[in-house]
Amino acid sequence: MSVSKVLALLLVGCHVAFASTGGGLMFPMELDEQRCFYEKVGHSSSKVFSHVQVLDGGYDLQYTISGPILDGGPGTGKENLIYDGDLVSVRGSKKVLFKAMNTGDVYKFCVKNGNIMMKSVSINVNSHDPTDQGVGPYKPMEPIKKTIIRLSEALHSIKEEQHYLRTRERIHRDTASNTFNRLMFWSILACTMLIAMGVGQLWYYNRLFGNTSSRSRGV
Image 1 (cartoon, rainbow, N blue to C red):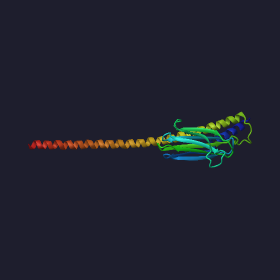
Image 2: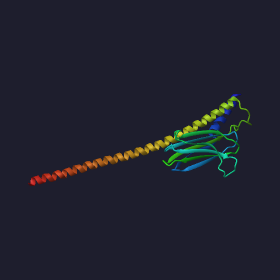
Image 3: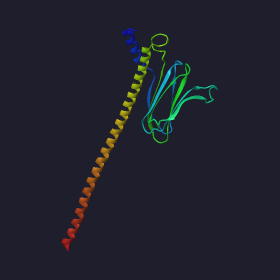
Image 4: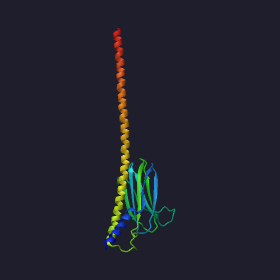
């Protein structure tokens, strides 16, 4: 394979990594609130990747992924449960990767907050069709193409991790700044109260001993 073709495949891989279907969302959640998101896949061989993270608040968040309704038709409640768990054991971050079953399937991703703390949550869902590489019809891929696809998936994972770290850093920086401002305010208030108490005690003792001295001289 020529150098130009290898470079073209690398560019395609980078494009797949940074321009995949879907995107990240960050939102606050109230107590006992539930939010659901949907992702439609374009091919039966598509890989669906989801990453949910608790940016601020406790880890008591329930995360559920369900697939298309099974035999029985709408209204039967027989959804294909792909993942169901909390984020306590995984320290507030969970990644799930699975393969779509059929073309055009719609998958539901739900997060439900507990009743302890409000939270800031980030969720990212992407579907990647391995046959859509811009290099012609689907064929058994050569080793270089498979390597580039793995590279593109790794680049996408790095991009999501950097987004998570930047968002978490911003939230922690805001929290630290807010805490510093409160500490400074209470420190100034405490110093003011101490000075006021000292001045008040000096005035009281001066008045007390002044009156005592006056009575002694009068006697």
